[in-house]
Every structure is written in C-alpha cells, then in structure tokens.
Image 1 (spheres, protein in one colour):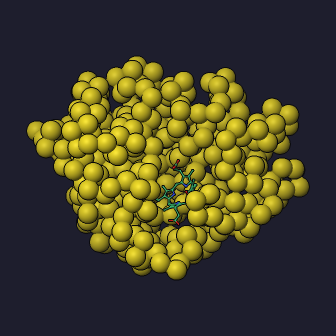
Image 2 (tube, protein in one colour; image 1 turned 30 degrees about the vertical axis):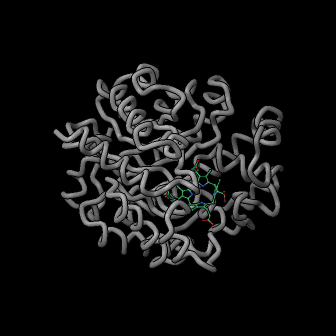
Length: 354
Ligand code: CP3
C-alpha cells in the first residue's frame, strides 16, 4: 500500500500528477501516458548528444543523463519521465566487466555460473553510483510537476544476462542453472535482489517518485517455476522499497500467464504487453492494482488512423479499470517515427480529458 512518507524531493505538484494518481487508482484529469524506452534512439536529438560517447559512459554523466531524460518530456508531453540508464548499470558499478554493444545489448566478459562467481556480486553502495544521485537532483529541479520514474532490472532478467554472458533467445544456460543447481540459483537471485534494492533506494532517495522493475525476459518461465524460482527474489526487492510509499511498477514481456503472480510479488501497478487485452489482464491480476500498457510498439509503423484505432481499443479495454497508465506493450523500437509518439500522447490526452 502506497501510504508511507515520500522523500521530501517529491513535491505536491508531483504527488497530484495524473501519473501518480493513476498508479494510486485515484480519479485522474486524463489518462496519463509515458513510453518504455521513450528516451533514446527514436529521437534525433538523442543521437546528437550521444555522438562519440559510449552508452555506459553516457549513463555516468549527470548533465547528459538529465538532458536525455528530458528530451521525450519536452517533445511528446508525456506524463512521466524515466531516468536514463540501463539495467546493467548497477552491475557495472560494482565492478562486473561488461559492455553494451550497439545492436546487440549487454555483453558480460566472464559469465556468472559457479558458486565462486557469486563473490563478484558485491553489495552496491550509494557512492558506487553518485552520478545517479547527482543526475536525479538536476532532474527533479528541471521536471517541476512531472514525476520521474526510477528503474532497475529484476533479478531473473539480470541473471539471464550474467549467466548467458549476453542476450539469449532460449535462456538455456540460465535454465540449466535454475533447474540443476537450485540452491546456487536461489543465492544468485538473492544477491541480485540486494543489489537491485540498493539501486532503487538510491533513486527514490534522490527524488524518483515511482519505480519500475523490468523483468523483461521472465515470460520464458511457467507460473510454477516463476513462483518457486523467481518470485521470492522479486518480492524481496518490492518489500525493500515498500516503506517509501512510491508506486512500484512490474513489467515483463510475454507474461500473460504470470500477471497474477507478478502483482502478488508486490507491485502496485502491473505492466502488460500487447498479447493480453487490459480487461482480461485485470481479471488475471485481480483487484487492488493499477495496470500499465499496452499498445503494440510495432503499430506505430502503421498509419495514424490505424494507431488511433488501436489506441481506442486499449482505452476501451481499460475503461473499467481502477487505474490505467497508458504505455506501449514493450519499449519504443529504435526506428519509430517520433511524430507518431507525439500524436499518440495527444490522442490519449484529448480522448480521456474529463
Ligand atoms: O527511455 C527509457 O526507457 C530509459 C532508458 C532505458 C535504456 N535501457 C537505455 C538504453 C531503459 C529503461 C533500459 C532498460 C533495459 N535495458 C531493459 C529492460 C527494458 C526492455 O526493453 O525490456 C533491457 C532488457 C535492457 C538491456 C539492453 N540495453 C538492451 C536489450 C539494449 C539494446 C541493444 C541494441 O543496441 O539494440 C540495451 C542498450 C540500450 N539501453 C540503449 C539505450 C538507449 C541503446 C544504446 C545506444 O543508444 O547506443
């Protein structure tokens, strides 16, 4: 329950924003909209400021992070900003040798596969990520009444990169560890839960007024395996930030069969991809939680009329929900026309204005 004291950086204007109201399932002036991966490669102004700066280095420069985080807010008039970073930033910060390869994703030099490897996953302290605190300080000043979403990768999704050594289609090495060495697996996820919790705390204490836990690839698991092998670690992360009272969003791709459990893990808002309509998702999640989603990011490559038709479908499916945050069902694709995103924000705002 979002009843705790928010850190002082959260102003009344932020608390009264449409986004936070929707997360708290309160009446809203309009349905709030933001887009996963709204900052980044779809924007020419992003390419301009990132020129010649590697991705992970850009995440450590507070002015640059603040500028990139602001770009989609200025351009699209979205209802929330998401802190510009990456899910592997806290792992890099504790000394894991990794890089983000353009067009590939995170690549780990020495994958984590044995008990001895766990020692490399040391605790994260605020000093390891002082640039995050600094960037969020700049951002809360510049954002005014627009809320800032902090985020982290969930233990399973982080483990999948660490164990495989990079992106993976079938997660076979990860699953081999999960099924074959359940105690080592549980300890690995518990370590990652500690690191993730510490990283979210830094962001909330610096001024983030909501957090999203990305378990992007957990849809690869069955509900029984999720409950046994993943849920305890994700629940630990949510519990660790519960006392701040900031809304906790939980998202994964292809998680239609897991939506109930992902809510149960401790989310206030459950993110839904485009495969399950929001009214059906609400039945699966049950009462007491808001939903976020869920237009297919590929639809943005279609005509403006087709985008509006799909957006209308999403709004209709969401009409009976207690709280709805409009979003895509996954991140903005890099070659998306940014004008299509701006138009979509405007459409949702005008259609839902009350
Ligand atoms: O605007 C925002 O949403 C904030 C920025 C953000 C990034 N990564 C920046 C980024 C966020 C929220 C993420 C999270 C992230 N990173 C996830 C979870 C979200 C999801 O999409 O499921 C995952 C799985 C990652 C891992 C990762 N990092 C991938 C798969 C990639 C893309 C690789 C590629 O080049 O196609 C990255 C790199 C990355 N993270 C980029 C950005 C802007 C591209 C790097 C660049 O611009 O050079």
